[in-house]
Length: 168
Image 1 (tube, rainbow, N blue to C red):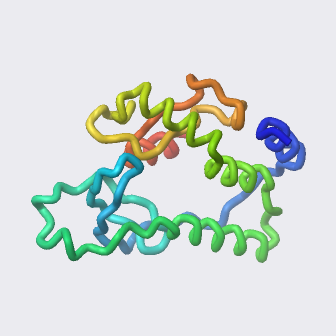
Image 2: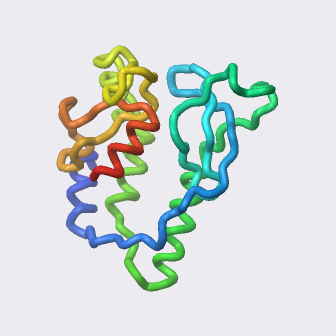
C-alpha cells in the first residue's frame, strides 16, 4: 500500500484529537545536540516534554561544554506517548491513526529523500531566520503528506519551527 493510500485510509478514521494540558517547560537542562548535518550545537531542553527552549547557546558562554549531557532524542516521544495514554485513560479522545501513519512515514526512506531535497534547496539554512542550520523540515500543509510537493515543505531551525507551530 502506498503512503498516499495509507494516509487516505487513516484520514477516513480521523477524529478530532484533544490533548490534555500542555507542558509549561519550567525545568530545563543545557545539553549538546548533534544536528542531522553533523554540527554539534548547545541548547536548553525541557526535562518534561523534551522540547528545545529558545535558540542555540554560544559555546563560549558554557563553562565546560564537553561535560554537558547528550540531547535526549527520545524525550519528545515519551512525552507524546504519556499524553496519548492520559487522553485515552481519561476517555477524552480516541487514538488518531493518522498520526501513527505520519510518525512512521517520517522514518521512511521516501521522507528522507524529500527532506534532503528541501535542505539542499535552502543550502542547509533555516528559511525563517537564515541564521541557523535546518533541523526540521516543516509541512506547511498536511493535505498531501506522503506525496507532498516540495512547495508544501520548508526547512527551519528548532526555534523557527516552534514559532511556526505556535502560529498555526
